[in-house]
Image (cartoon, one colour):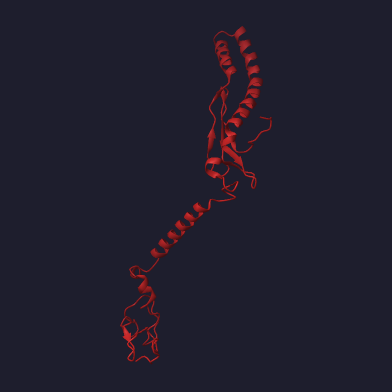
Length: 215
């Protein structure tokens, strides 16, 4: 692998003085992968010298200082090497979208058929299922907002028998009333044409079947 850095924003450095570890995240879902902890070999030797200097001082103390300075430079170099190694290990699990340039995990956020991330080319099957679910939720809320006395109505009830105003006195009806609140007219009483027997719609002045004036 060349010296270029592939990941610059979607990773976290979990390294310590004792070793190196990195976490790479998907720009879409936020999940990702964490590399195994890679122990920094020089840290062990320095820790031993640090302990010895605390007990004995003198020569061991000077040796510990030299080792600590060496560790700082070595740690920097080892960190870069460990990061490049981590990149090589993790890169196959990610792909960079050619449209939005974001790094996406192949497992969940990459649309293989379209060659784009699912942010740019959503999975239509998933979107359709989500749209259907949203529609169902809307219908549930719409039903919940209905007047209590109207919740039992069937589709047939909605298509016929509901009177907006009283055919007798013209008073508006706020709900699916059976009787007019103004004059007491039976709004549900079925009326039929005296000529052909067809059912007359509430408020109809003529029969829709034969045109005979309603009685």
